[in-house]
Picture (cartoon, rainbow, N blue to C red):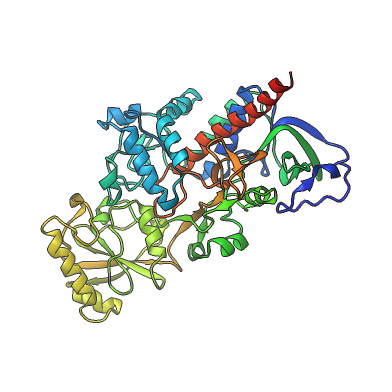
Length: 500
């Protein structure tokens, strides 16, 4: 690459006029080889585009491969696994749930499209060779340790979600023994992408976008083989680089509350793709939002306990999804909350969570004193809860009746969740604003020619930490990765037809 003055700061685009010689030319450049990048590259190649994929690490994977492989699927009457388990999942219910899960600023266009096409997306995944056993697990879990398929992976049965959308389990996990099926998902998608002719370059880090005088993205600077190369694209660039949870400076600037969590989930996830998108005018939205969890169940019996903060007050209905509960924990004052249980439901959480048993007593007054609460505070909260639970109601937080049990069988105990010592993993949810086609939007809401994005580099279906459900990220990146791949390939094809 011979250039004039070129910068390789991701936050500054390179002028096309400064490129004296292009090192490589392709129809589509996909940046990142997680599930989003693999799906974008695969669909673009199948649409007839020449696709080159650049991955900064030494192989495919990203955060997708670190996941459990759960994909949030349903609607149109239900997937085969849902129907076999006796659940009829209407598209309207899936859409209503996703809109609530997206929060006050849910993307209605993306939600509606995904709800309508979710079952077809399941069929597409199966056609690529993604394996599903089709069996259902009713018990509350994070992800199966067996090779079963269908689980409750969100707050579908919990208030307030259950009031507006008929509950159905929608977490679909690959047929894989143990945790970590995301690796199998990415391997399967990688195989299809390579079969489709995608030219894969690993150890090749995208450094900056290249834009022409009109602001259209026409290429990308890639560092590969020890030097920087200028790659010209005829159709466009698809960013699939992940979020920014591994970039401490960006987290401090945009999502400082996430700093209360100790374990970012990602590989590179340094926000470079977001910065590159912004360098050509892309708008980043909801950058303060993040998912977090301390995996406090299984066992499911703990859901019958109650959480209290340092004022001795409940702050959530405990039958919500573990991530929604954990997000509420992070928002409490101080660094500690406690899960109160009695002998009938007591069990040790998994060791990974680093949740300590810190108080035991023959009465709630003894537990209260051992924790250092003012006399009457904690005991009053429990007494009030028990009185209502005995009647099968929770007028304060609306926990579902099947999880209500008076905490009246001693001895009694408190499990401590400590933001300084317990395991709170997190990843970011904010990113570039895009159309359902993957086109990146600027501050005026107009698409930037030649620039597309998918996955956590965007703000997609999951965009509110308190509404996240397991499987939404992989649903978002696989489905909208496909949409971006199709759209970028069509852009070039439409222009070619117009020129003929």
